[in-house]
Image (tube, rainbow, N blue to C red):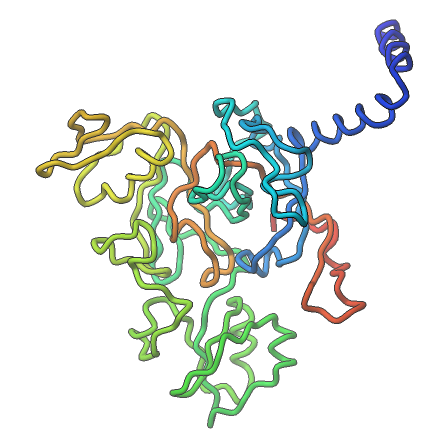
Amino acid sequence: MKQVWKKIKQAYYKLPYWVREWVIPILIILAIREFLAAPYRIPTPSMENTLLAGDFVVVSKIAYGPRLPQTIGIPFTHQEIPFTGIRSYIPIQLLPYLRLPGLDTVKRGDIFVFLYPYDTLHPVDRRMHYIKRCIALPGDVLEIKNGEIYVNGKLQPSPPTALYMHYVLTKNNVPINPVYLEQLDIKMVGALATGGYIMIMTKDAAKKLQNLPIIEKIVRITDEPSKLGLPPLSIYPSHTILFPHDTLHKWNLDNYGPIKIPRKGEKIELTLENLSIYRDVITRYEGHTLEVKDGVIYIDGKPQNYYVPEMNYYWAMGDNRHDSQDSRYWGFVPEDHLVGKSWFILFSWDSDAPFGKKIRWNRIFKNAQQ
């Protein structure tokens, strides 16, 4: 072994200086980013209070197995050359999807990064990065009832940092001290003309807020606001905006499903009622043609009453349950869109904080799976 290393060292020092000092280090960094781990910035509040907008999270690509590139582009870029708006890659998919073996598989509760499935402007490996929590695995049956998540009929524990929308009514409409709301990490959405406030907070924060003597009542919103006697809320979408975007499935953010998550090789019975749920799996992600004639479902021109998925799929949701564009809006996460598992927070920057307080020192090197 010593002789081998000696020969490698001799060969290394025979290389030109510029290759040793520039080319090889860049190749090593590229290999680490492509196959081991890479940092990603959290752009939105969809994972608050678990991950905050401005967190730079190191994501382990080797956790689920690194996916090999399918396009060619400028190193250290994803979609565009920074500050130019110019595309940084050749928009031609040169290679098929291929993933190397990983250290583990996706587990329920994992916070993972994936490529946004509904990004139609870019090839798969150049699509926008999303980070959410994996709620359901291939083959699971998911259902949301009154804001609580059930998988295969079992209630799933909520992360303590998960945020929910609440209706808060104070006595005589007395305003709440914003400093106290800030201390509890409560986000004020707005005041209602009919009285009261809409706020987003954790279950624990709601209990603490309830102890204020000026609070009349706090009601967690777990269904259509109109059912609670509240006016329509812009952050609470109608069922047609949610997946599967039809008029048949009248689901909402807090009462959704049941829905079967596709598993590779497992037959899915197709009906005219559930076809909209699996249409994207058949066409968008697995490349088959689909049409309905005279009440009969045709896949690739052949009548079918079932479909066998060629990939595994996952269900992703943000911990900020009423402010997250997730699977409830666009459906399943295909296996070939997985990027990696969040690992730790490398850096955190609060763009809204005053100068001198923009760096969130208490978040640096924090576990990004909590």
